[in-house]
Length: 107
Image (cartoon, rainbow, N blue to C red; front, top):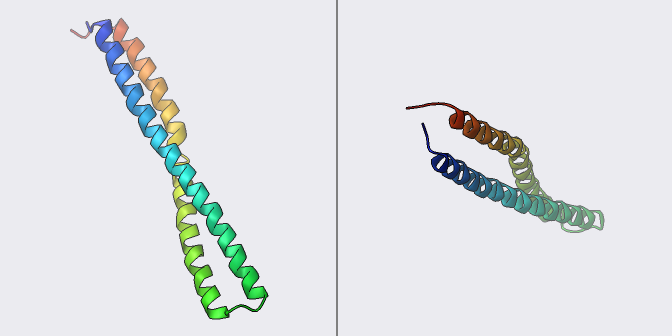
């Protein structure tokens, strides 16, 4: 039978690693959201400059560059969304794993 201390250590280590991973994902998402907002503001300014008669070719080119980056960021944000609920599911699996192994004789 597994010793409770071993189970406690394994669950604690799993939780620590999970928190580190989720924190990294959260930081990445925050950075992507900030950059997305910045790009949206820049695109708006370029569009306003075009409306005021600015240099069309240059401004259109800059808008295209930023819209490409904006699309990439949006796709990254959309793909990151499923990762967060998964962490909660993994946390509950860890708790269930701990309870099952405490009550099972695995010798």
